[in-house]
Amino acid sequence: MATVVKPGLLYVIISGLSIFLSDKFMFKFSLEAVLKQRRFREQEAARGLAEVTRKIQLEHEKLKLLSARQQAVRQANLLAGENGLPAPEVELARFSEVGLMRELDLLRQTLCELEKNKLLRAQSLRARIKERRVLERVRERHLEEYRREQVRKELHELNEIAVLRSRAPEK
Image (cartoon, rainbow, N blue to C red; front, side, top):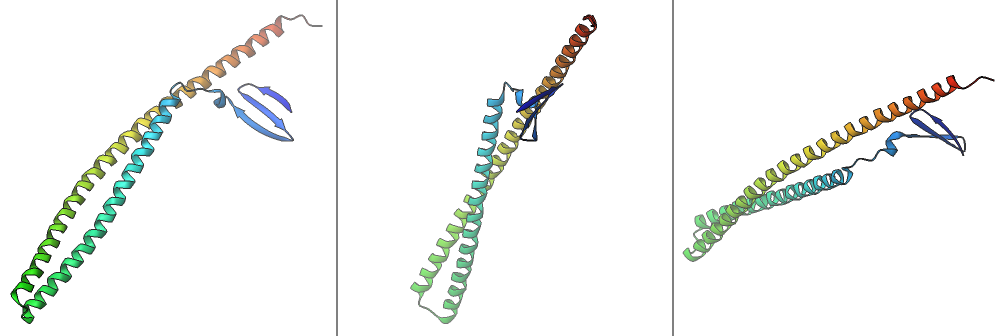
């Protein structure tokens, strides 16, 4: 393995392949743990939003089925009334229709609450994305500062080497 050092870069040659390693791998961001936590919180918020969205979809499917069932019961009640069913059976059919209407109302209320929850979760997700992006911008600024500092140090070292060479007696 041969190593050739150039300003700002380190080339490692292994079996004829050159692998480029930059100063970025030497950079340590002091808030990396916080950034990792922000990413995790963002993922959790995204999972929560997906879960609520899935629940809403299931509730919409239930609502469609229950609405169709109510329509079928209503049609059956109308036909039963036209065919002259006894009053107790007609009354029982009306009670079942009223029960379905109550279930539909409860389902609509549940959907309304889930929609509110979805809005809150979406807002939370947007806030967490914003927090992560801010921290990533700070990280990028620190990385740029680190790179500028490395270039400044390398130039300073090269200047020192040039000065030492110019002062050295020639043979």
